[in-house]
Length: 95
Image (cartoon, rainbow, N blue to C red):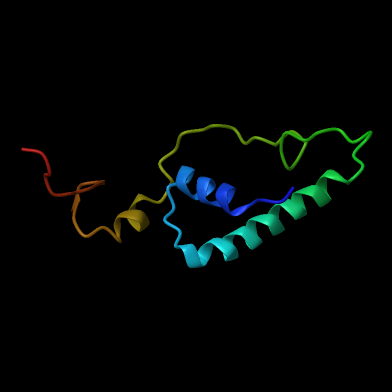
């Protein structure tokens, strides 16, 4: 499939892209190259190949969902600019 200049202008308008008249020919060449590549992909024989819904068709191993405090509150709070007991202290943002 080959695009003409009127179709390129319409595509640019639909995409809300301002294209100068000098750029129409370049854009037409690039879009035709993309469509040529898609035509090449359509020629590939995919009979007998199952479609994929994702990159890996395997079940992921899950870790137990256990809530904890990180077991090192002093190390974590050592980097805090301000603290209130065992918590981060932050400035009040809502009055």
